[in-house]
Image 1 (cartoon, rainbow over the protein chains, first blue to last red):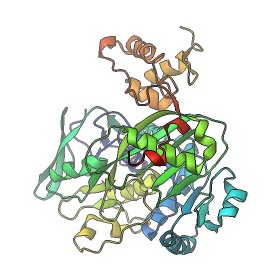
Image 2: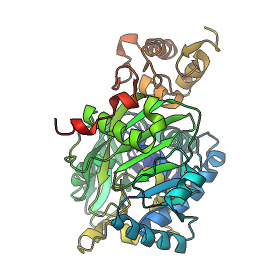
Image 3: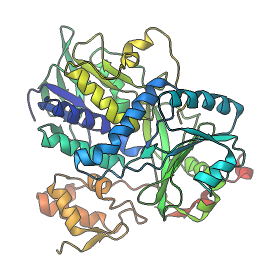
Image 4: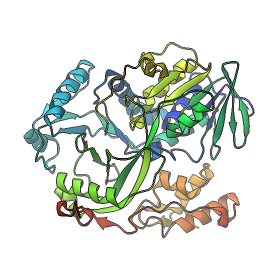
Length: 381
Length: 93
């Protein structure tokens, strides 16, 4: 392992590997990525792989639109298959509050140039998913350019491309402490020695808060378990990711053919537990049976769990941290890190090389919480 | 072993693909599972995990006893969604 580097990135998920790639592309190749286990072993590799542009805040919507643009050229740019597929997202409204919120979302998203439309239940069945049971659905919003990709392959592709440019990736090397001298980052202490560096990116997901605390930086990030399952593969018969915030559910059919989906238990306590529960399996299967009766005879092959790194406003904490020079933040993605990773990573690489970012993300800096004004993104499963 | 011999029967992954993955730097059964899908099928790696551990051992010289097998996930065998679906009348039982 190197003893010094221009930059150390903590976290070998999609964000850490993508920032490493974009930094190297901008000429900062003397970078080390520290990963405590293997690539995508945390939230990235446990997520549903959806890439959604429909949000209730302009920040998430813009980051997502720009990320879809980047994702759509990524296979060519990185020279690897990441199973990118634009199957759309269908978001279902079941309550009057949903309907009211979705109308605001669609107005905001359309103003930002997104190809999103509102559909009646009948239009959903006729035009998008004939097999969906629309009982109780008041309306749906549908964005055909929403997408999905394989999180493992995307992370691996970014990592391989970064390595080709000279970045070193240290697997099974947990970062223990961020070292600070005279108000500036001085290095990172790992299980395999210390790396001196003037720049650190904290992209450690739910572990980013305890890590930042070693540098005296307090992050309002709380881990929550989220569970998910996957079925045997079937010939593809529906294309969009189907989600509902009031049901707390999402599911899609992958390029490989398996149906993958999860739901968020609103009563889930915070913590680092990543075990699977029978309760989830049974409730999820009941929801799937109701929403898509054709799936009743399909077998579940596996279930697992991962952690959402939740912030109070469900928006990530990005960019430089005021109190410690050279300390950059990219965590708190609150369950949607994979889908906005490309644009977030490009912006971080711009900021970390002293360039002016081409999209203003000052609103997503850590200091926003000190002001006490927190408008939560409502489009979170 | 011939390159086109199938090692993971659920996902049709060959010896050659696994050998190349190890040669490209993947060192654990968990990483190979995520990149090639072996162990993600209905048998969850019961057939292939030990064979993959042996390929890693052959290629890297690591002792086979040190190579961990991938995590097994519930359910132990594939089960139909309709059978697992929780019924409303069980909700309060």
